[in-house]
Length: 252
Ligand code: NDP
Figure 1 (spheres, rainbow, N blue to C red):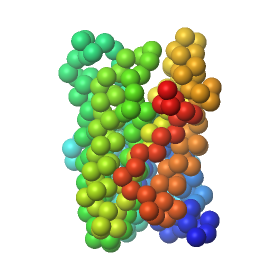
Figure 2 (cartoon, protein in one colour; figure 1 turned 90 degrees about the vertical axis):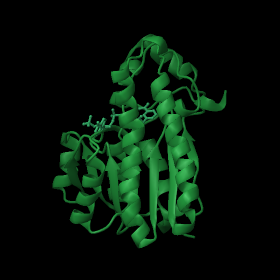
Figure 3 (spheres, rainbow, N blue to C red; figure 1 turned 30 degrees about the horizontal axis):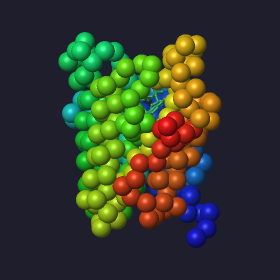
């Protein structure tokens, strides 16, 4: 065993939500580790454009909730790079409010983005991975799949992330003997656009920080390190796990 097991030289990765936040940091680290990536989101950002212009990565614009998008995304990856070794199923949205007032449109948006789309993307990615007899899938879940959120109420989001964790477990079971590992990463509170409003609200921010034993929020780069481990050969005997990276949030 050597440190080279943590590298991704020659690997091709597909990263949904790769234009900012955790997905972007993962794309940056994967490039450093030697991989080339297909990044996807509804629109390109300055940072993701810089990476595609530098030549390491490519970008495919798509609304992942479009039922046709996942197959098209995997097809674009294969057309551009010729294969697919790693999927980071990262795109997601959060929304909250009282359960008894949470309407169908918001419920559908959460479930379509956080559960149905990752299911379809993983299903589309699985086919070329099965053909090559190897692959690694990292589904981005959340501590919200383990606990109730506070002070914000987010039952649909919590349910979607718990489902991602269970989807991970069962996919891992189904494909372990065929060379494909499937794991999840469950971040705690991470400084990205998704969480920034809460972090900038003194009351919400205090509750989140007080409940995080390390007393601080995580960074997208810290999540990228975890995703790299799970995606790489360093995790060659790891499948079906959900790696919680939360500064200790769910310890109590
Ligand atoms: P961001 O809001 O920064 O990133 C979300 C990403 O998802 C963006 O790239 C966005 O791109 C993409 N996305 C959202 N909806 C769609 C869609 N319909 N089609 C295509 N792409 C879409 O947040 P994070 O980086 O924090 O989130 C990444 C993942 O991490 C999510 O799954 C989130 O649930 C999870 N997570 C985040 C935590 C946090 O505290 N930040 C905690 C736990 C989990 P665009 O809008 O341009 O399409």
